[in-house]
Length: 383
Ligand SMILES: Cc1ncc(COP(=O)(O)O)c(C=O)c1O
Image 1 (cartoon, helix red, strand yellow):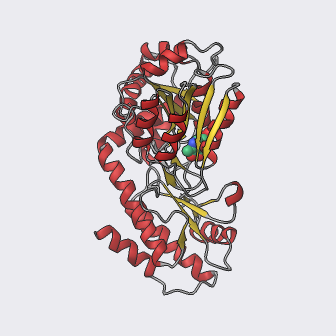
Image 2 (spheres, rainbow, N blue to C red):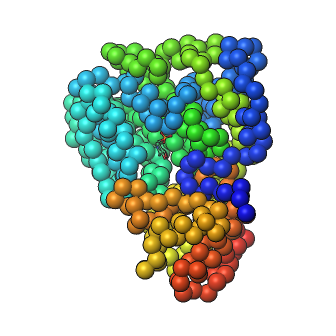
Image 3 (tube, rainbow, N blue to C red):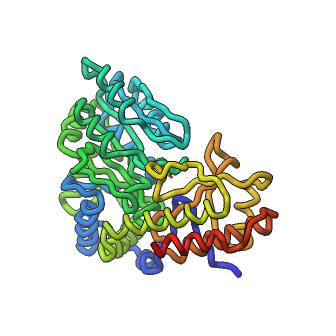
């Protein structure tokens, strides 16, 4: 049977039918009063999910576009940037900073680990002349399924005085992230994850400290220019032609998110991830991130059983059960597979996914008692 695909990758994530239908309408003029009203509601609602009073700029671009927008408005040639790298996406910050001529220093940990706050404190305390201008970091590292202790890390950066630039692409709308309360200076995210719409939009919020630094940026990006984008935002408009239909989708998705409530959204992600992890453990498989304190609620990385390959697991899951899970990235390719519980994912989806994973492993010759995984998932949900 076709057309039952369930994306269990950590983005793009499943899109609710209501959102798809709102997206499918004829595009309207982006300078019309009608669209202006859509923008007004989006700009206001996004602040709620960024947990901020700051304006949230919206770009027609993928998540990396917002990363580019962040650093291209802050970095001048020769600036010192400290990049905290726990996986591919943390590495991407370092690459972008280098691209704008920054002198980049990194704190890098083995995949599967988080940044140790003491290590960050040590490096920043050694910077007695306060030369480090920016610290980049990833809240939830999608390539490994690790969530950094952002609250603590952001406070250490604030004590030093550098600008914190945070990737919240797979944390916003999934995992608690408090821009204002935790003192995050710049926070970015993308549309195709917790925000439950297709890829193509990304978001950036900056506080006054960051705006003051941006004012001194010698050659800010033209398309991603913070000032021109904010000028348009304040007029309930956009600087350039936006992806109109994605904005329609976003308005609809934000309404659904408001109806559910942000705390309930965080709780749903936590419950789903914990149940998924219980199912994986009960099947006797190893989790790439065993430590519950840093394990992500948005994406779970799993090691395959001995003698069964990641490509085979992904192939059977896709062909026989229409469930798509992600491979590992770079060095972790074919070593782990990653299951997303990000965005529009319910208890039923987790039960179905573990049941389908069981059937897949059974077909591939893995020896276990069928039902143990699903049983553990149900028990976890009943807690
Ligand atoms: C944590 C994180 N940062 C950045 C990105 C890049 O976003 P995009 O692929 O939309 O450019 C991703 C994409 O998966 C991500 O998971």
